Amino acid sequence: MRNDRISYSQCWEDPEVLQAALMVTSGDSVLSISSGGDNTLALLSKGPKRVVSIDLNPAQNYLLELKHAAARQLSYAEYLEFLGVRESTQRVDIYKTISSSLSAEAVVWWGTHTNLIRNGIIHSGRFEKFVRFFARYVLPYIHSRKTITSLLSSSEIEAQKEFYETKWNTALWRLFFRIASSRFLLGRARQPIMFTQADTGGVAEIYRQRLERHLRTKTVRGNFFLEYNLTGNYVHGLPPYLEENCYQSLRKQDKDSLCIVSDTVLEYFRSTPDTTFSAYNLSDIFEALSDSEHESMWQEIVRTAKPGARIAYWTNLVPRTIPITVAASVTDEHLFAEDLHAKDRVFFYDTFKVHTIVK
Ligand SMILES: C[S@@+](CC[C@H](N)C(=O)[O-])C[C@H]1O[C@@H](n2cnc3c(N)ncnc32)[C@H](O)[C@@H]1O
Image 1 (cartoon, rainbow, N blue to C red):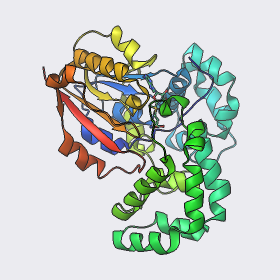
Image 2 (image 1 turned 45 degrees about the vertical axis):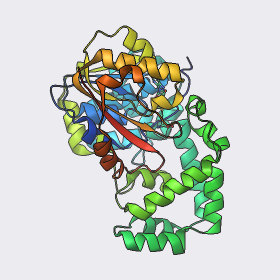
Image 3 (image 1 turned 90 degrees about the vertical axis):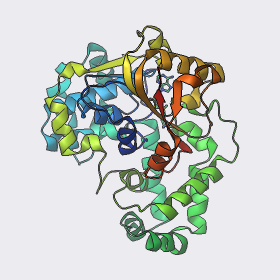
Image 4 (image 1 turned 30 degrees about the vertical axis):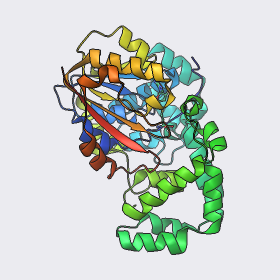
């Protein structure tokens, strides 16, 4: 298990879509993929009984631990400064004020990665470094700051479509997008396992079509994902875990309501009792599983789920259907999920899925 590198320092799955699907409240026991930690923290802020946040990469969990500690111990202004949303030269000093609340392993890991703290931990992932490089050093040669700001301010769909077609979708933009979203480059920017099951060629064209559909149907204003993609930081919008109400809520909760596990979900399930969880945030982890692992995963989800438990996940390049062996216990909430996917602010997924467990 490689633990020396953060692949994702943010979550690239829409937290509002996720919360609308899982409807997490105080009675819930949640299993959530850690990734950048953002969506685990957003779900935790709803006050469930417990969140088990899991990632096979321990570095992702050290990141979640540090974001959680920062929310609980820093003022709101320091929280945004420390994480990297606001400019700062003090981050390493701020880290020293909160490090004593971290696990021993996290302290050792962050002790050898102070450069990531200095640069702002939300920018520390391999994927975010890739996105920022293009946003800061390549995109300015393709579109002026004024053009980028105009797209990001669009609040009316017909005007946005017109702007995209006449001002944004130039030959140079298309060339840039084809290179930046090629399988070759994305295979290096995303975690390497994420492409292992995808035999799709023409990845750049698939993503181009998805982006185009997105820009023709959803207004961009307030879309903090696109803002980060195009500027390399959040300027006008913030993910929920960085908003003040969520920050306040994280400070009120029992610290122990978050349990962080470094393992694969499947291995963790093998030691999990029956009927444990009522909500599952599975990111798009099915993307990297073989067919037999996918089936074993669903058998374990059904076994570990409470009756009525909700499961949410995204698919990207690998289509998935519920294995026949568990189909009788799993309801596909496809109309609900399609409605939510229509509101999704991340353009690169194929589908969003919501299921309910029947027992
Ligand atoms: C599934 S990845 C996806 C990120 C992004 N949506 C993408 O498509 O590139 C998010 C996180 O899930 C973790 N992960 C992937 N498969 C896992 C598994 N089977 N068990 C636990 N964590 C897993 C990765 O280490 C990573 O931090």
